[in-house]
Amino acid sequence: MSLNIVRKDLENFAKIPDLKNPVTFFGSARLESDNFYYQQAKILAKRCVEEGFCVISGGGGGIMRAANEGACGSGGDFIHSVGLNILLPYEQKLNEFVEYGITFESLAIRKMALIEKSLAFVIFPGGFGTLDELLEILTLKQLAFKKDIPILLYGEDFWQGFDAFIKNSLLRHEVISKGDELKYQITDDLELMMKILKGQ
Image 1 (tube, one colour):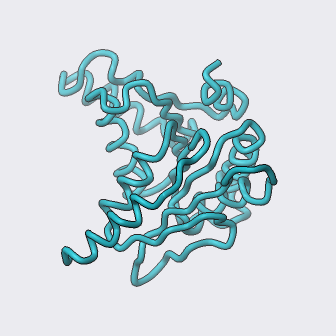
Image 2 (cartoon, rainbow, N blue to C red):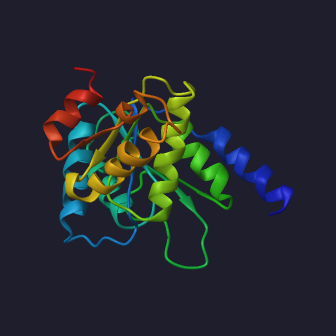
Image 3 (cartoon, helix red, strand yellow):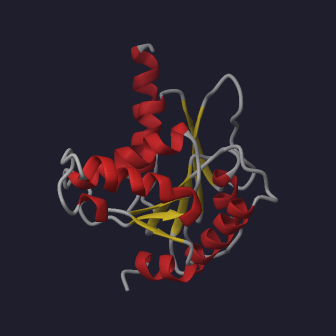
């Protein structure tokens, strides 16, 4: 990747305006609008905006589109629906529900923007990209760079294997510290998620 691309993406990162109570949604780009997780992400994003949060996503399809769809068009005097997209040769383009969007060329800088601009994270089911994003956030929380951020994983059935791996492999073999397994919370309760996001 050329230095010009990196420089351009860093300039775009610097242009992102201050966002009101930003929450980033992560999840698969492959889930269609009739998928259960898509619908739940849409509902949660709408609730977030109603409670005064700005919703950030990767700006593409699937869970990203669901988050932007739920957040879009809510009125008020702040940006509700943000998409920080990535230029790919296939699969992804900026979805139609983004109110403020940027398309990056560097995955690393785009991920940095998604993480650094947010005060909380909601993780829906997803593939390698979602796991990459989740593990980076957990690492930042473990190292106290983002010490008090909520990390909420929606989908108890989907995430139970991940949770078992953390507890039965990483914790048991002492490659993470006791308490690291508590740095995220898995739930299917949207009301509980809202309470946690609101600090209640």
